Amino acid sequence: MTYKTYLKKEIMEHSRKYRLLILFIVILISAFSAPVILYFLPKILESQTNASMDLTMLFDTGQVPAIQNFINDMYEIPGILIIVFAASTFVNEFTKETIVIPYSNGLNFKAMVLSKYTVYAVMITGLVGLGFIINHFYSGIVFNDFTARVQFTLQAFIAYSLFMLYHVSIVVLASVYTKRLFPVISITLASYFILPSLMELLQIKIGPYYLIKAFKLGPINDNIIYSMIGTIVIIGVFIIISLRKRIDI
Amino acid sequence: MIKVDNLKKSYKKHEVLKGLTFHVNKGDIYGFLGQNGAGKSTTLNILTNLIAKSDGHVSIEGTFGYLPENPVFYDYMTAKEYLNFMKSLSKSDSNIHELLDLVGLKDKKRISTFSRGMKQRLGLASALISDPDLLILDEPSSALDPIGRKEMLDIIQTLQERGKTILLSSHILDDIERVCNKVCFLHNGFIQKEMSIKDLDTHTDHYIIDSPALLDELKTIKAIDHVVKVDQVYEIKSSNQDILKELIKHNIHVKSFMPKKVTLEDIFLRMVDNDL
Image 1 (cartoon, helix red, strand yellow):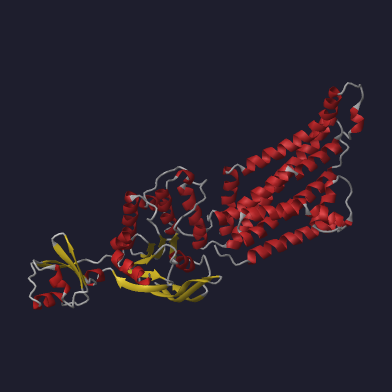
Image 2 (cartoon, chains in turn yellow, green; image 1 turned 45 degrees about the vertical axis):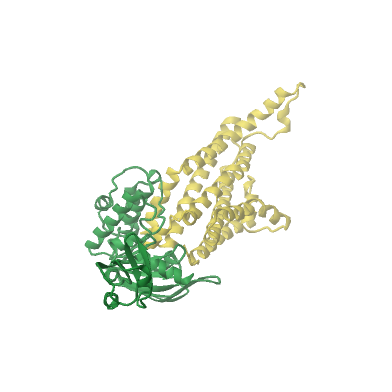
């Protein structure tokens, strides 16, 4: 009962706090702006220079680079927003003590965490998926170029979604242990921005951080497939550890 | 209804509760008194499973509802939505409209616009959502204005009339004296005193006497521990229950003699003063 009740409550919270709307708008802007910017940037630069040179030669243009630009953009503001919203969703229950009354009325903490994770996972996967679909086809229309393979975009979408869901599971774990917003966001953003470079430096070719390789549109190797499976396992482990923590409110 | 035996709670090296023992019987409105920081909320949080105890035994018979000192809600909901959410969580079949009527909330506004008093009343309605046998209320009236306090105490009395047992924590002694039938004082990590409110009438060791006798005459009587003149009468303190006989025995002319009613505040202050 707690699970279903919290599912409804979480959907209401994301809607009424405009998180759903903000994420939708940010992803939509990224999806539409990436190909448009790539299309107009050479022309804008040309108009700024006196020499009559064709700058389009300096830029990779077309559907594939436009999708690539979108994925790069998704790693920035939308990615940070997804982490910050996830952190506030989980930590506010402790810091604002909204959990106290439900908990004293027999709230099942595990069901609550699971329902929060489910709603958030479905929400970000759905919105990110929508962004990828719009960007894939809109990029084709803008450049009148439909050479990008749907399979590669789909692979990038799955890798990006798993990478984000992995970071949401870090948020859950850190929330349960620290119960404070600042450490949760710091830990997760450190994992999001620093660890991928570190893993590359250490030439670790498996695990959640290796998923970034699949953000490049193209065929994927076995390591990426193992990394996808491994990430799902790690997400499960993080969630289980979070659920097993004895909570003192 | 509630049995607490030798309850202990420590935070690292700081021992907040050093062995609490008290029992609340069915039908009681039991006042749980103590200074700020005495450990009242800690005790209630242990009773309601919000935090773990360090040692001791706690048992609660039947179901309970809890109103925390600062109830916090999902403020994007309306009161009705929140109670429906709580109803669904606790699998109860309570009538939300009846609960809203009981606590005087009919507003369809979002909780974010509620005053402190409205939030306390919504908290009380949430505590009642599963129609519990026992209510645990932590400082339900401390942040309210006089009208809000009166309304809250009226609701608490109504609930007792409906058969609820209530454990009420507060440092507002007037409120406790008004609604409770039994109280205990938490101080220095222990229950220092447990008493019935009825005992306040027989608990006095202070008396008001109207007498033409001189102050110095009264001071010579050994049965009088302390005496002061207040306006035209004397206020005396004596642990001797037969103080009137003693006065007469010493040929003191007494025009009127009246035990001074002891308040919870007197007992509480004496207990704290003894510790200083």
